Length: 507
Image 1 (cartoon, rainbow, N blue to C red):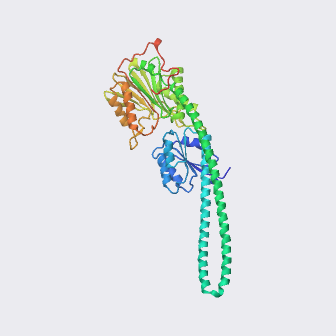
Image 2: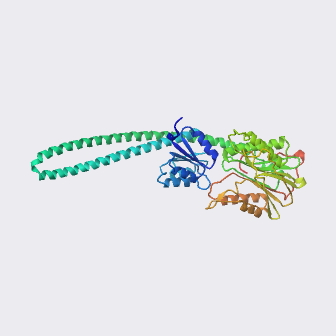
Image 3: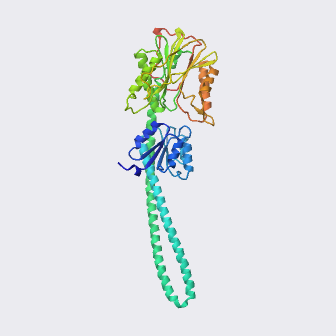
């Protein structure tokens, strides 16, 4: 195994530990890898004695984003020559141009292709090596030529002095001329050698130029290969969106049981880590909001596990108790991912809010795993907090008993469940969070409106707050009330909340 001190060093900067681990798996063994979870740590690593040869930099990070990190690197004379490749989930439109204008040498979008990452890292490290090598050669030859020029100037001065001496000493004219002629011949030989050496250097530079042109051609080929790979990946993800959307409840069927309701499901990427679950049972209906680890493809995989597990618990096992549903869901997720073992590779899970609504008994039972239930009664905001226990993670208690909390349903009450994507969204010039307090006030101010109008108001407020900022996370929200009839349909006419496959457009 090569000595780590001789390996080229790569600094990986990403606020998600899982993303650092994925890149480390791709590059391990070939390079010395350094990880940083935020911009400040990255700048310290870059300015340390172990200056990295290459930096893989995420753009979206809390505090200092990737663009600011790159700007500071280029502003520092000690780090301005370190090549930086952006590795980010942000799309190329506009973002790639901005990154290259700031000084990045390349732009790789997530999810990554290991062969593409390896090829681009190797390419840019080779370019950096040859650039530094050529600069070193030019510096050495420049120093040598400076010495020669100084020596030549000195010899010219001595020759002038000799000519003066010849005039002053006519008796030694021939001797001095012969002596100086000999010295000039020696100097000319040296000068000839220096000229030949300079020509040799120029030849080497031309060869290096030809080599770099070939390298750039290979880089262009690699770029086209990466674009083809990215296109195939995006096609797969778009099809995955259709599959994920088919897991969502059918809105028309939901409104048979909840005529006063609205639903918002907006993945940050094409697919997301949030999911809405709803199903009718004998005594009423169950509705849940699930917020899984991460977003994008990893989050979507977790929603598949969560959705199938809830169907198994509610439909196959006949469990309708929200607290018990969360407990069983915790067991299934934790054991399915082997996160109840010491050798588990992942540490993923979810937060959830579940309501069992019994319209005939005018009652509602709620249980939450970190997500709350908010309800408005008489223009007053009430919050029922979920237990401070997430589901499925390595540190989640396998035997934790989730708490059921009951609420009596009254006319003109409104209930809301949401993931944290809305309240965590950054907005405005100062990039401030929307915040829980402002979110609850927004619900209170609009609770009297019809639910479709409430949905429009929530979306408009979200977009106004976000402005030109990137969407931080998946945004999912459920709102429902009982201003109209909530009687259950006849059992013979009962319709499942889940369609076969439907249009995957966002609700």
